[in-house]
Image 1 (cartoon, rainbow, N blue to C red):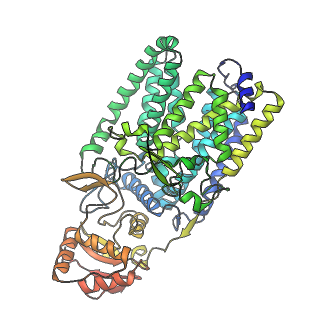
Image 2 (cartoon, rainbow, N blue to C red):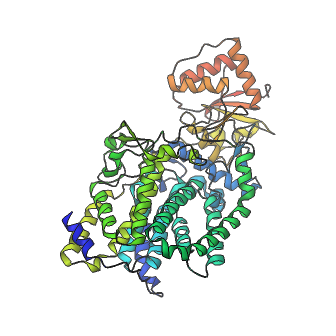
Image 3 (cartoon, rainbow, N blue to C red):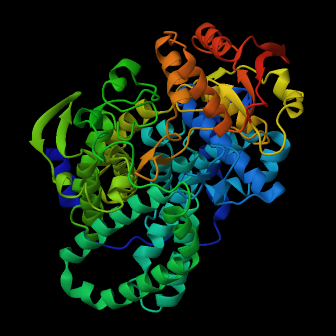
Length: 593
């Protein structure tokens, strides 16, 4: 701490960093190439067979984003409605605006999906997201906030490849493609400048519109963090802020009005049309940041331990902090170094605010929930907050940490050689153990000939559907989701893994699947328990009624399913003996539809 105090004492009064000189773009090539190489390294196992491999860390969401890419292809090549899908959840719909449909990515990638398959689009976007987010932060930092390109490179490296980003690269296409965020931040910061009301406001409004079609949750997180920054910045020196407030608020008004006009119809569809819902299947603070995770290593870091990390996080895709011990120390050091700077102090306060919110309503430490209350208890019932997972606010804190590291590194020339070496050594000790490992994958079963050869077309015609068993659902029906996506959503199927109302119209709470039916509940229970149900006339009647509701033409048993023998026996007892066609057991039920 003595060394830190000495660093602070040597820091000069606040001086805005001079942007790098224009015309030196060629020198940016190596930082950008380093990001691209690291991104490919992280994703290379999935690149080996994009349509045949699945990310081990998040099988469900991998299947969902395959579906999302297939939907984008249908919009461009088949004229489907971009805001709604009727190929899953038949005979209902999936409200694509109410889901993370990433239309801003799936539509541009539609030609790739059409010719090479949705798996190629997914791995490309995951690779692009990591490298692109790092490059965007490098570009904004180097042009507007720091003098040193090394400082900008470190900031970009952290913001693009921090454990939070690597964690979400387990199929979360919507979170890793955060490359618009630094430009949104830049435009908000510059709104206070005279003469930028219209130009800055329109630019910000268009960026907001674009971000809505990438990920609304990220936009909300960015707004919360920027709001905390603006308040902290204003309170630090209210007198000069008053002279800037008029420009800032006017520009913000222009941006908000433009975004509202452009987004009015999509947002109306999201919140009012079929498939809309309210809230999440869990309380906002059910999944929170564990205090011990701040100084721990994530499972995907080279120094990480899977067993330890598993006890401190929600899942392999939610290691949203995990700065490591030296990383946490360097974030604190950077905060102290920058504390005399009005902007640096406001940035740090914003990071602390979102980090505290990510801890939830009661402090959790080392996997134990304590009775210690936290400020988020005052916020968790506010509108929109109930639509997010609070632990992900830790991801925002991680990004802010990257900005702090870049700003502090930029101050190194003002330090003595000894203190500079201490700071650089701290950075090395912080960054090296956090280096990411390649994401794990496994080879999924190939499409059976029944699907690959188009044999299904002999059975599924008109508005009829194919019913895979297990049904396409979260956890128990992953293969059905892959089947739907890899066949280009050509085959209508019931149910699916998506967000929709739990049991409309009585319960519009968000759910990860379609409203339950007796048959879906029974089949799901078989996969979970392996226990055969008692099949009587009532079960047969409800089974046939559900098949009629789904407009089923053919029932297909997914090969090598969990407890497939029990599923086969149950289906045989209800529908009679199957036929082996194209490598799968099928039941022709067109007479019921």
